[in-house]
Length: 78
Image (tube, rainbow, N blue to C red; front, side, top):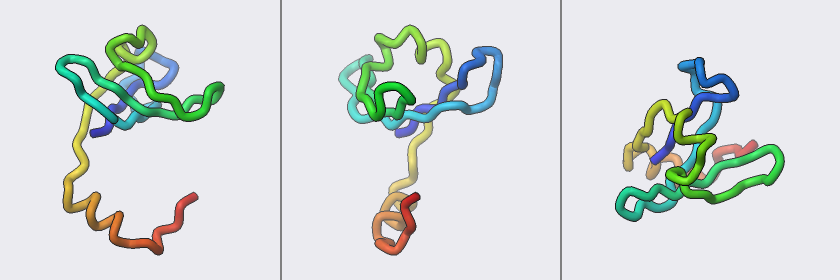
C-alpha cells in the first residue's frame, strides 16, 4: 500500500510526499519513506505528529501491475 500526504502546506490538497506501508499491526501502521535530512527511514505513522494531519489517502497497487513491473528487468531505474 502507498500513503499519500500533503507537502509542506497543510492547506493544499495536492500530493507532496509518498510513503510505502511496510507493516500493519492492528491500528499501528509502519511506513518507509525518504527524507532530505535522514535518508530512507521507517517510522510508525500513528506516532508522527507531522504526517498524521497531512494524510490525503491510501491506495493499493493492483497485484497485476506489481507483477508486470517486476517481470520486466529492463526497466530503467533513475
